[in-house]
Image (tube, rainbow, N blue to C red; front, top):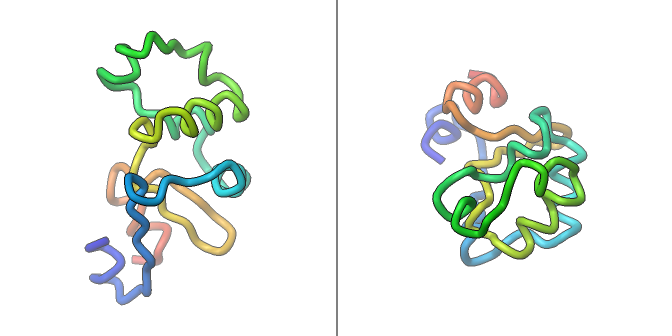
Length: 100
């Protein structure tokens, strides 16, 4: 992640397509997430094509189930620190979290 490099922060990048998060990882992200858990789900053409609605991702458990079944719907990037998780959009949020 370019912002982490600019700030001199050591960052581990995980490609969710190659290594999708499992249930425990998603639960840990949600536990630290500053954003509403439903924001982890992308509302794009795939979301619509799957026939999903807001009611399908209203609760954290539903978010987890949808993301386990459809990894491409995971909003990204997700930035994690020891005690916080954010969705890194807009990118200024990442800079603010990492201390820049």
